[in-house]
Length: 318
Image (tube, rainbow, N blue to C red):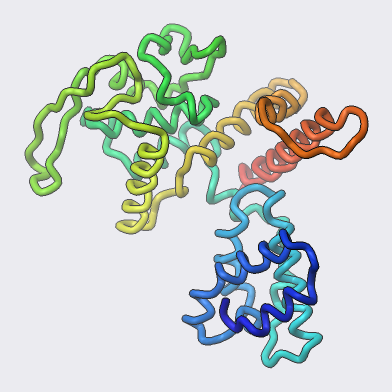
């Protein structure tokens, strides 16, 4: 931590909770590199300096934002009370109910996702391995659990009904996704463009099997996730114009909210209980004694989704 003596004193006085102390350390460690670059403690910096780092810490869920805001506010106020020089209280007056972070980390609809994919991957018409990366995100957007994506077979894809059928459930195939899905279902080889010779290419066979997400070799979810992250980050480094920094979760929750929005427009009440129930299924939580506690927890998760959904809807009009 930068200014470790001051921050350690704050943490000691701020809380006796081990978990909250660890949160404080995580937050301060996240700011350390910037503080060294500034040559100043974060408590002296304006909101414009603090916000980008805080946005990276909080992510897109509203539930993850408040604990970090609370600690930062507590630290700024503590510094003011203890006469730390040059304290700036601007961050205390920022309205954190805005949706700028959510806007830049989710997609609005299938067309927006297609634009994001176009910014990172080669066109479907070039018939490269990028088609499987596109399908990964389309499956995420359709609601397929990440651990099941590599289990989807070509035979699970039903173009007539525009769905992917897996484990008794139908997941939508959006019109914008059709070219990538057709390539992944029909092609036994992909065009391979040598990095050193962009004008030359050969066709390389995909590995044997019926899996939809199948390249020149075998993938696991961690290796595929790393590969996708690398591609997205490389593109952002080159152009810095990728609409969002895509990840499985960000695309998945965008699809969840889009389908709920379609239902709401059709007059169907918004309800995330079934989503929350699926999220908590098979997981063990430490719950206090009393009646109906597991169900109460599911309802809390459903309310958190509803809160994020309402924030996501506000980005549609921005």
